[in-house]
Length: 204
Image (cartoon, rainbow, N blue to C red; front, side, top):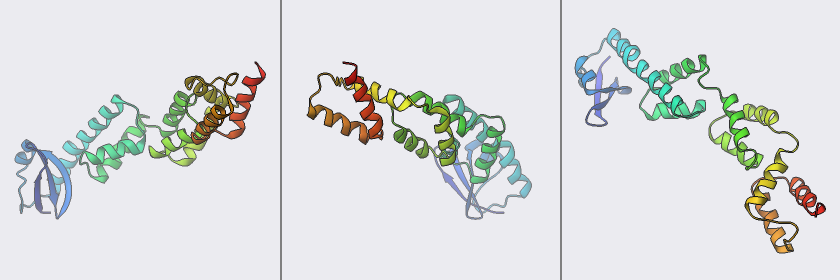
C-alpha cells in the first residue's frame, strides 16, 4: 500500500489517501508519528493499527458525544460521522457498536418524537419529518399505530384552533373557510376537522 496523497483539511488535520482512495483523517502529530508522506509505503500492520487504535476509537467517542448531546436516528448519526471524514467501514462498525448497547433505536426515537408533537402537528407532518430523518417507513407506521389514539388528531386540531384564536361561536363563513384550508394543508383529515368544529358549535 502506498500513501498517494496527504490532503490538509485544517492546520492540524489531514486526510490520508492510500492507493488513491481516502483512508482516514489524522492529526498532524499522528501523521508524523507513523511517517506518513506522499509516495511512501505503509504496511498492512501499520494500516490496521491506525485504523483500530486511532480512527475507530475516535469515531466511537465521537458517536457517543453526538448521542449524549441529543437523541439521533441511525441515519443522522451516520451522516454526522461521514461528514467528520470517517470512512464507510468505520462508520458501519461504529453504528453496530452503539446499537449493541441500545444507544440508537429508531423505533424508540419515532415513538418519542410522535408523543412530543402529536398534540400540535398532524400525522402527515410528523410522518414526513420522521421519514426525512431516515427512519424506515415500516418503523414509522408501527410507531404511529402505537402512539395515536382515536382522539389524538382532534385534540391537535383543538390546540391549533386555540392558537389561531378561532372561535366557532363567533367566526363567520370566511373565517371558517380559512381555518379549514389551514388545517387541511397541515394534513388533518376533513372529517376530523369538521367534527371538532361541529362539537364546538353544538356546545354553544
